[in-house]
Length: 253
Image 1: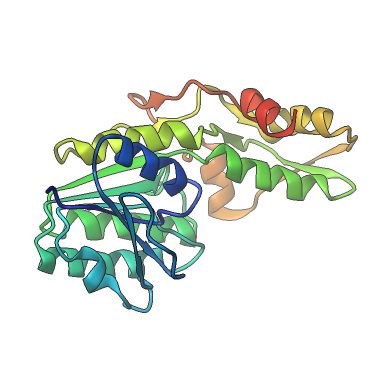
Image 2: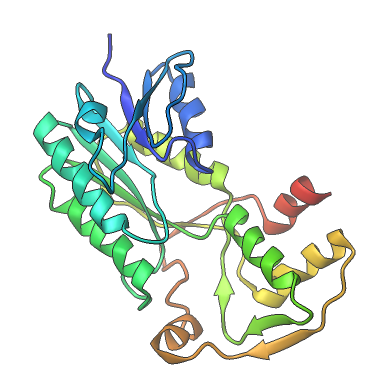
């Protein structure tokens, strides 16, 4: 019997796509979750909290591969360090982490926690793989929905995004988890560049809304980084195939 693969964040947007792929490959899956859940076919749930250090030892016990997908607005670096410490003690042989494109270039606090998490993984002593991905379509939609509730839709000048399909990121992560440790692999972004106006127009059309668009400026170092495209995939990155328009048509059409 092979060791289960531990997935943190296994019940989230990305994890919901990754776990079935791992099961389809014939692997047992263990999910670290903050809320108790019943066991499913080939899927075990361990209750715990990375930020509180609860349940982590039990989650990594007997595991050879860890796929770290859990993340939030704060504390990602602390959570990753807790996981890495427990995984190293448990003799984990492959640690796979999903990060964000631009983590090493965009001066935002959240980005810094992702970069610190990358460093914790790389310095853990465990063979590792890290994939930086662009913003998922689902997160982009949440952003556009919130902006569309305003009487005027703000369009930050110079801000461009490459939203990527979460299912394509999940497929790549499953492939990496089942392969050999590869270090920092090529980034994965969506197939097209969009400014906020281009992201908003098909959404507004599909929802039957009209909003005037107001150019705004992102101030400070973060604004300069975004205008310089530091959040965009570098040369050599991989591109997904599913477009923003296709995602919206499926979700809203």
